[in-house]
Length: 396
Image (tube, rainbow, N blue to C red; front, side, top):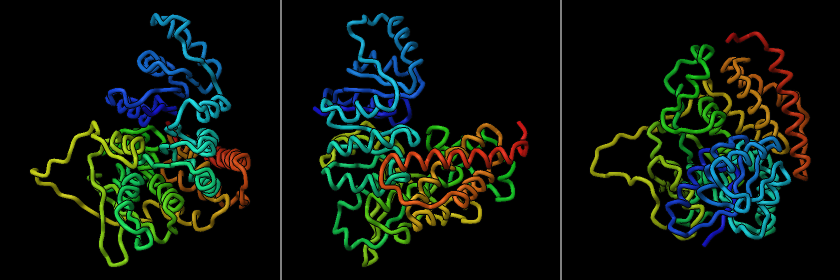
């Protein structure tokens, strides 16, 4: 039986992970759950899965959680340990009681806990893009040094991971990541200045959190995936291509030196890559629909439009540059997306804020997680300054 700590248990990946556990017929136990501020959902999860520890982002949440658990009739003697803050995240990620950590906290908040879990040699199912985008070099050095098992949960990287099992890595010449194209795939570039947060959040294929959905709309999410793929699989940016595949059935492809291409294909259901991360190198039946090959289907593959989605190319440039560039990229993007959702800037201004932040921040080579977090903090401050300079450009 595997014992899990789930970082980000109330988000999309977290709730899907717990559904895999629920359907796993005693294959898994939950040691700890960590959430941000979604106390109601966390309370329900505690009542069902009975973790030994539960962590919230802030102390105020612990009081509310206590009240909710009491209101649901849970005796105090059956409460998990209720903790809060970053040090508590690190504690549950490194606890010897858990052999597996699912890293699904959105943002750089999950970086330190995930890094420390890796340093403990644990199995880590990685669904937090910021871990590798902000700290890829340090994280992968820790994986090698501590013999940890890092298995990607994102559907594209999970698909690449599966494809790369099929042959000699040295014979692979190219990795192809697919992208849905988001809600604005067919929207003219000149119309993007008028799109609303509600339109950008209306993803045609996936139901995800707000930030990742906006990043999908700008294709920044795919840029982050290019960066992650380079770290995970040892590619250089020029070896990673992106194609638009609106049907989201083919998640990744690898091309061998002789031109042969292997693809990973599955339903658009995150429980399959989550279960793969939990059971690798074995496979077991996943609670997801199978593709019905008796039904006709049409799959499209199209090149992305760099002029309409400039953040994708910016991600390539940052990975080529190395150092702190990708950390700055991620931090500035998070602030720009947050500002767009608050109607403080327009949709095209997301790129402008990110690009200008990169131009104004000094380039460094961080050697510790603390340095990465400091670069992240400084980049957010700079991005907020740039957002304020555009205040009033977008009306509610």
